[in-house]
Length: 425
Image 1 (tube, rainbow, N blue to C red):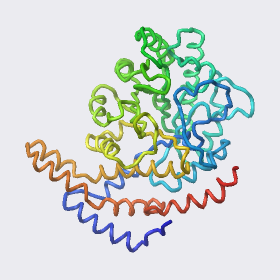
Image 2 (tube, rainbow, N blue to C red):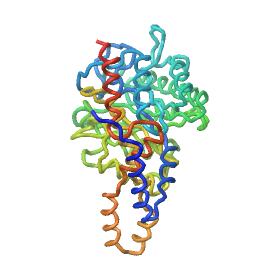
Image 3 (cartoon, rainbow, N blue to C red):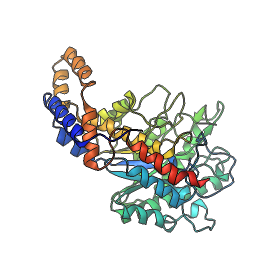
Image 4 (tube, rainbow, N blue to C red):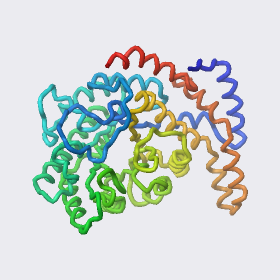
């Protein structure tokens, strides 16, 4: 589609942009150095449409729906890892892999989710270690016969609740093993689809049951050097349009009381409600946050992340208030209508571009103007910054990181599609 820019043009553009930012007191080299140390966790489920490798006959996906039938999706763990490697090779900076429990490798044996062990993820751990990747983890509380009622940890049936409690406990053990093996904490995030399609009478009892289940899951402390626990809220889902037990208010209270991480998913609130404004408030009361950066279009549709105003606002909040060391950035989208590797690359590069733009902002100057009450100056500066030549800095950063500049990466993806994906049938 496009040839990569020459080193001469990249260098010239960078030097011009560097001087432009220096006029505002911005150290471009420092901004790039900070960006290179910020890891972004890529979700494995973009590569196979949230399929996993269990082949369990469940009636319900639990509110998870990937749409589209683009050819070439990964069918095996090796294919998924190979596709991830291709995507990672086209993305600058530090990457992590985010895994769901349904991606276990059991050697063909049927292993129930409440019986999963670290050995069922040894292939993933060894692979991540060999490629210097951190790993995050998630219990899979959907797409299973014991989730067909629409309720898991808040189910009225004590036996079903117990099954899912045991599954989540097993996942924390796996997360600990991952963190020990890779030398970086694994963030183990719990999300459940529990809720009612139509208006419920009893909103209280499911939440009481959910609280009891969570208390049982977290009863055994794990060293945060190896595993960090997180809980994720949602406003509504497919089949739970009227009520979700694990609401934002429920999990916010639980995270504050219990000291676990709170997860904010950009698609889990009202369609026009952004999560950026929530970050500074929540971090006054909890130590750390997990972000699932997504893009909802009219509903929690998990579209591929783009460089939108909402994404930029999230990045600005993280940078302006020094939150990069307290917030774990993960992505969560799945689009089966386009090349899946291109989706990974597009979304992750957009996240990193947003962070770079925020890092190139003269934050101290803007805060001084604001604190002086010069709101006219604040508005003028913010508008001027929108047309600053950040793209030239991004191209230079990509070149330094050894990945394609501009849209040249798409040629690489299309060649991979021709050589690899097209042969999967």
